[in-house]
Figure (tube, rainbow, N blue to C red):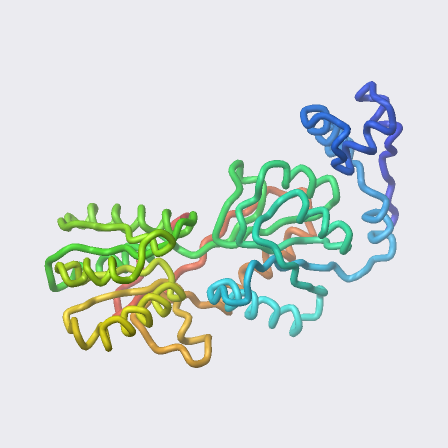
Length: 331
């Protein structure tokens, strides 16, 4: 493969700065102001600049390397998804892959990917400021899972959040009156599902108190107190949260479902089908092999067409209790 690269000298000439200034800006060194760095990076992208290690890799025609960012091996949702994705990587043998531990998607994380010679990053983290530009400069593509960047410049694949929350609302509202507890944490996903859940109940014309119980800030006795006061319908924003909270409530009560037989709850993720040892619960279900296959195709398309328009795709969910699924909608 013939690869022609734009030199630092050309960028410096067009920006009317020194070659050192261009070099330091592209390496994100602290001796250059952030506004100037941004202007130089933008010009470098416009001119098609490619760092030497990227050009060298393209000449060697090596197998692309995919980095999967993980924050914890106890994140059941993302670990279940990444397990399905890496299974495809091994079966198809088109890409190499590695895991990188991180708790955010920052420029520093992208720098680590540059050092590892990564071609594409798969992550469920929301990208922080400057990530897209720095990744673009270093020819690193990014595919977001269940989140989006602010300006829609990066590919993203998510599940039908609106349809799933509507299904949860319908399941909990059917057959009985009373208030609702939404159990979540302080994160984007929980806040989004809470908003969609409230909207779904409103659209259905369902009345009743809806309480957001944040397990990051409140303890289990407080939740038990709500249940004792009559709030018996619970939407857990994730299955992982459901299993954790139910276990704690069982410790407090000797068996929360036995003590409150009218307790009705639903989770979101469908993990019991994929994670050994998990008890079956009512949950909005995700088909992880289908989810992974969709992401795999997005990865393939992006590596083959790095300058194409970003895709925002939605994977349908399977609904509990034989409900008819709504048409997938963009989350």
